[in-house]
Amino acid sequence: MLQYLFLRLAVFLARRLPERWGMAIAPWSGRVVYRVSPVAKANRDNARHVLGPEADPSQISQLARKAFENRLLNYYEMLRLSDMPLEEITRRMRIEGTEHIDRLVEEGRGAVITSGHMGPMELMIHGLGSLGYPLIAIAEHLEPERLHQYVMGLRVAHGFNMISTRASLLNVYRRIKRGEFLLSALDRDTTGTGLIVDFFGTPAWVPDGYARLAVRASVPVIVGFCRRTDDGAVAKIYAPIYPDKSLGKEEAVLDLIQRSLKLFEAAIREYPEEWHLSTPIWQTAQGRLAPAGMTQGEDAE
Image 1 (spheres, rainbow, N blue to C red):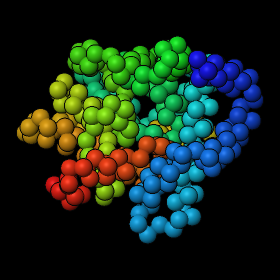
Image 2: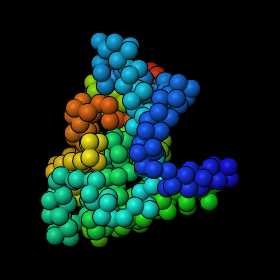
Image 3: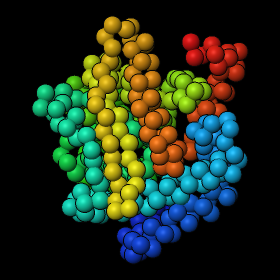
Image 4: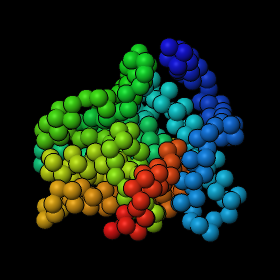
């Protein structure tokens, strides 16, 4: 209950605070939280993999700290976006590559749109929703239920449906087959059923649900990412990636994940300061490999 009350208070303050103050306070708060949060260790490990083994410790810390700044900015925007007019969201959010989605809409075909914890992701979600696409999103179920419902309400204000990870996958499958678009993450597994896949040259634990749904429904995966600009944000939508029907089911799932991550990895390499994932995906993979007595080389095969 305290989390729910704190969130209500945060929303109240965020919507009444001058935006220029909020945009200054949020990254400052991120720097403060970075110093005390145990999650910072995961951010440093993620930054180390992005920068490579030759990276200087100061570079790693700087990138990890920047991730916290962007994470707090994203939270601040989430608190405000549901109350923001569509015209203002459209002004701030430029989306490149919507022709790929438009083409699928014309064909009556659904797809899985996947991205990661990069840039102003909440603004990108609301921006896509404002364009009128038939969107659905799966979100981690929060406790207590009152908190979950309130967060869901904040995130669905501009034209898409959000469902819990507890929802029936059969329902999601049917909606995609009817031509809807599922929004899903490709860098954070919230179900514990992901896979170990090469990412930045090292095994990482990543979600596989979006790829399994795409293979089962015979629909493409569309990868996108978002980054901040001086006047708002820009999102890039890549061309659809279709399941390889010449492969077996498990091979096709793995192939889709690898091709999706390749695009996302290139985006992170270009804008590393925008990636703010606080889940230790490489450490998780190492922990899952070790009990089985496997080596990284064995997994890569």
